[in-house]
Image 1 (spheres, rainbow, N blue to C red):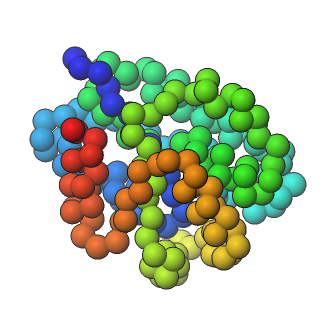
Image 2: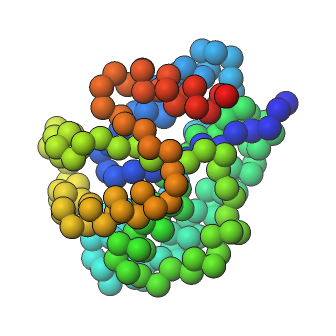
Image 3: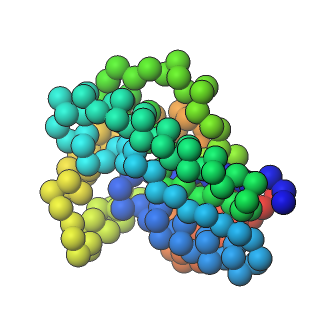
Length: 184
């Protein structure tokens, strides 16, 4: 079997990362590729960041959670064509930089480097509409609408060199675009 290609998907809450991954899995398997999906436990710029002191205590949790995800990735390398990961250590890095937490960036070179790192986004108005539309929207979702935090997170994401993918419009067309990028 050829080399397994790893692809990570990062971005704010409610931009459609999971939906995009599902559509991409459908396209890839239809074209004969084998695919494994993983959902990182890091959940970076998400739930536990709300209480700053709680976040500070959990930076190492996020790092260890990503290491668990990496172990899962390493177990399938060479056995499937693609590993698609919902969130990566980039989300944890964004979290740390936005909240100016002590993050041991010296360990970043130790992490597996994905072959492709995708930054999924939608216009902020659309993201907020999706949050409001969620059946199980919680207070956590609404806090992610803090404009200053979103702006800071956008700046950090932009600095990381991830491939930006606009996830508005026809999901299958967006998945086709991502497939074209990762199957070159």
